[in-house]
Length: 78
Image 1: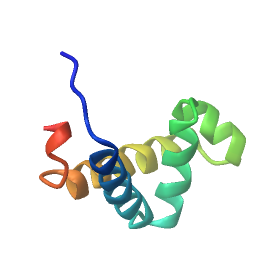
Image 2: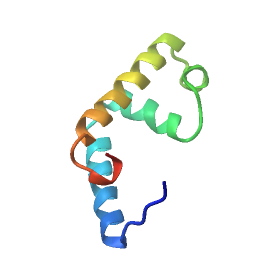
Image 3: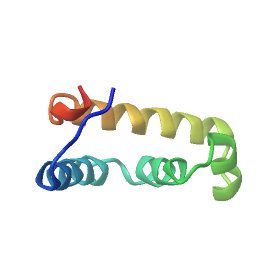
């Protein structure tokens, strides 16, 4: 289904997402940012020189943190 949002709603949603993103622990935020740029956890591990398991855990926990912080805050995504 398609939906429309006003510029005000889009700006407000962007602010809420930025707030939630900034609230992530630094390493989780870093991994999630690279993931959102299109890389998987193995590629992120290679880029950062970290174990793939570590990047996988940081990614999934960071995404879970974002979901939790955004749950109920953005009606558009419910």
